[in-house]
Amino acid sequence: SDLLDSSIETPRIHLFDLNGHQITQLNDSLIPPILGGNNHLWTIAEGNVDGNPSNELLPYFPNNPGNEIIATMSSPDFAYHENKLMILRFQMDGHIAKPTPPNTFLYLFDTICTQKISGWIACVNDFDGDASGKEEIFIVDGGTFRIMQMRDYSDDQFRLGHPFDTLYSYTFPNQTIFS
Image 1 (cartoon, helix red, strand yellow):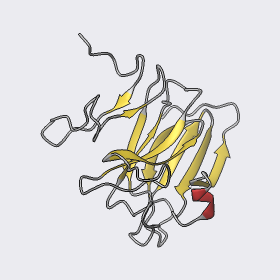
Image 2 (cartoon, helix red, strand yellow; image 1 turned 45 degrees about the vertical axis):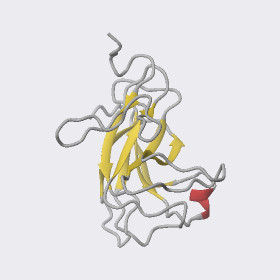
Image 3 (cartoon, one colour; image 1 turned 135 degrees about the vertical axis):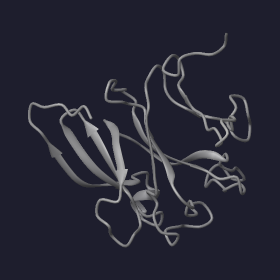
């Protein structure tokens, strides 16, 4: 069989509809799965991390309606050396232009942004209740936890490849957070 455990070789994130039908297909040029690195586990969450509809920078960064999918290539059981924090979106209503190369578009299921990071996602929630409407991402790395928030699309740091702001960080000495 061609089916493999998702943590062996190249792990992928696939989407399924409410009836269990697969939306993403391995060799699909329109809706391929999100590919990981080699031999790792995932942590997956969902939440509205880009916030209110006013957070957009057209044409390349429209606000994603509803919740985004948040993923890392590490888990509480397995730290991956090439780990990234990824914000993903799925939109069936058309293509979004990419800034480079010219005349190219995002896939219907694609990343909004990524950043190298250590740790795994413990939860996503609106911890601060501010007016941005953004939910924060709680990242755990050994005995350290960080509360991170995605920057606004118009923020220069976002466009320079630093899409997240660390709002709070704390390390429990000589301890490891498992859940």
